Length: 467
Image (cartoon, rainbow, N blue to C red; front, top):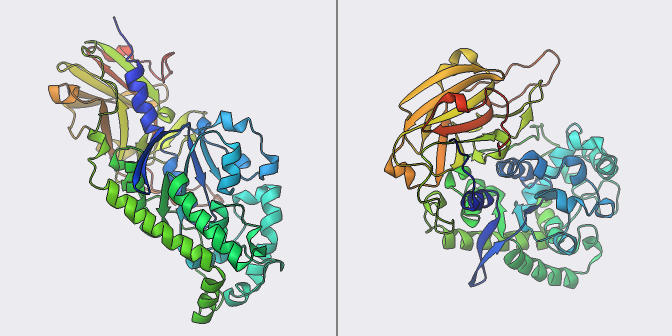
């Protein structure tokens, strides 16, 4: 009889891969916290788009707060949204957000404040981005954009708070304390007090604080904080959309730089504190083993896994690295493209017997270069398959990779499935913007069967027990 591998032991692993538990150093104490989800407090032009793409590896789309809700002001917020989603990207101040949100892991990413301001200026000068379709965003940004387009950087930076188009001072300090817009009216002494409060918040309330200038190392720290396999940190999602523009508009002279540093000295000091905190946490966690091999906190798998079984997942439900966010095909099928890394990796939670055969089925619905599909390589826990074959199903080609089970495979409960193959830039339809990504295959479903035949996996239709 065929069985589907279910049970609490596997769900704990998936909870871990969905960022359920964090461990970090708070002062001299170690803290291990379990929360309902992740709250990414984002400051504009501080690497948020890149980190948001990284976080999309861990949550299905239906668990991520949509953009039209991200841009709402706090007074427009629907409190029921806290219960609909598990991942939130918001530009709200921490202390006000914490009063309304359920228990969430709070994370942020900071950038050198002067470089952030220059990047903001470049961003405001370019064409309107997709968020301009929202009235609340357009009302805030249009005066800033018009001022940036009319003035060189040196003049734009000297607009005083309250002048039309002036940039907001102290966003990092505001994000960590009471709110961005209120801080320009504070005295130096009040800002000094808020700075100490912000430092305390970063140290005690933020499970993770990353640094844009240490982006890859930041992702390593994030993985170690949340007990994730380190292959997630290998990606390079950084998206720089600001165009190169000629001088004199973007030239930052020494006098303007000194002015920006002086006017934003509280943000500069908070950023330097964050860098020290980041270095301390990296040092404290760097000695730990790769969490891919650390199963101490997972319940033991079944002692005697069934000698026959099957399991299948939509690509939306499987965590992994090297994949782009979920898209919909013209037929409405969920697809995740490989290609953001040379090797894409999926984490499979499974307990298999020590002998017999295992077949892994990959349903492909789109390929950039179909003539090179045969070059796709698959590895399970570093091992090449004993054989592979391609078979047609209703959604497209299916790769079936057969592996010989062993005692080494049976001792693991978290398995890594690696996909490597050719990538290319997709062609653009006439009149459409160019898609600058490199894409490989568009994957829809992953299934595995052991001790049996291919006939047990549906040919292109999700099973009732698909996760």
